Every structure is written in structure tokens, then in C-alpha cells.
Length: 255
Image 1 (cartoon, one colour):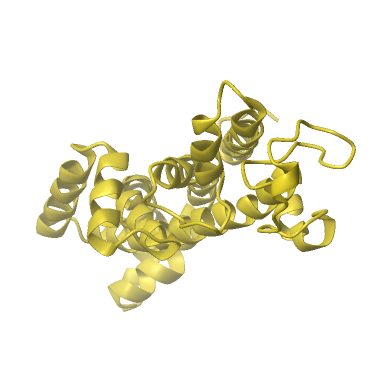
Image 2: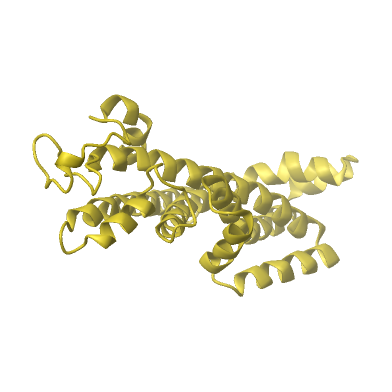
């Protein structure tokens, strides 16, 4: 994806420093010198959007990693062991799903104090339920296969059977959930930063840039338009990637 590539190469392609100020050039419209204009401190908007992409994507990817690890472990144990373990895990999932994810994330960030680290932990602790449900469903199907029964018959322990023979077959659905989860995490990180509970100034973040642009929306609408477009394109890209991967891993898809 072009957004990911631009974020990785931000130090090389950004025309200015992310916090380089020039008060004399504040609120400059898009021009040849500043392709996306400047903000209220005279900072180049293109540069800050590029560096904001680094922050947003880093937080989102780490949050998805945390959520995936928790969800995979919990969902796999619930699906394979069943019984009381499955009952407890799924009721815990139901409790988490009873609240809007962004509300839970807001509460956790408020407790941990606003920062990129707090947002990462909060989003990881909120979005694990989706991974747990998908993994549990996949494990319930695969644990009844003959090769799993053969592993048990040969005396393999349940952890070895689960992690060596069952979990590898759930990789496809996990990739799909993670790709879509990246889009959700980017949106949530931007929302928290917009509210002042995410990445703190002067570190650029798409949500924080949107918040700054909102204060001058009538005077300089482009300050909000460009970071908003970056968020939309990024989320749309991850969602399309998830749809494509879902079709690719769908065994019912006609070749």
C-alpha cells in the first residue's frame, strides 16, 4: 500500500521537519512550496501527515498484534478444551462486546494517562474479542479432523496437538481479521488523538491534526480535509485488502 510505503519513507520524502515552524508562513494555502499548505504554526501539512502516518500505523499494528496474541490464545483454548473453559471465555467475550469498543478504549486510556503507549495497550485490550471468536470457530471445526484424532491416538499432549496441528490451519482467517482490524485500529487511534487522549503534541498524529484543523475549519478547511482523506484512504485500503484475502482463503470460491 502506498500509505504504508509513504510512512516508512517519511524521513526521506518529507520536504521539512515534522515540527519545523515558520510563523510568517502560517495558514498558507496549498502551493508549490507547501503542497498541502501550512498550519497555525507555519508547519508544513504534508510533512506532518507523512509523519502522522508513521505514528498511526505503528500504534495500529502494535495494537493489532496485542489483540491477535490475546485473542488467538484465549479462543484456541476455548475451542479446543470446551466445557467450563469455553463457557467462561465466551461469557467474557459477551461482556466486552456489550460495550462500544471506543468507550472501553477511552476508559482505559483515561486510567493509563494519554500517550501512544496507552492507546496501543487500550486498543489491544479492546479488540481481542474478534480474534477469539474467529479462532474458536475454526478450532471447533479442525479439532474433529482425522489427523487431529491420529495425533491424540499417538499420545501427543493436547498443547502439542493444538499448537502444532490445529492452529496452523487457522492462519487464513486470522490474516483476514488482522487486515480489517488494522483499519479499525487506525480509526480508533485517530479518534482518541482527536479527543486529546492519544499521541500528545508536538508529535504529529492524524487525529491531532484533524483536531487542530477543526479550530480553523472556516478559515482553512484544507487543514482537516487532507488528514481526513488520509484516514479514509488508509481504512478503505485495509478493508479492501481484507475482502481480497477473505475471497482468496474461501474454500467455496470457484477457481
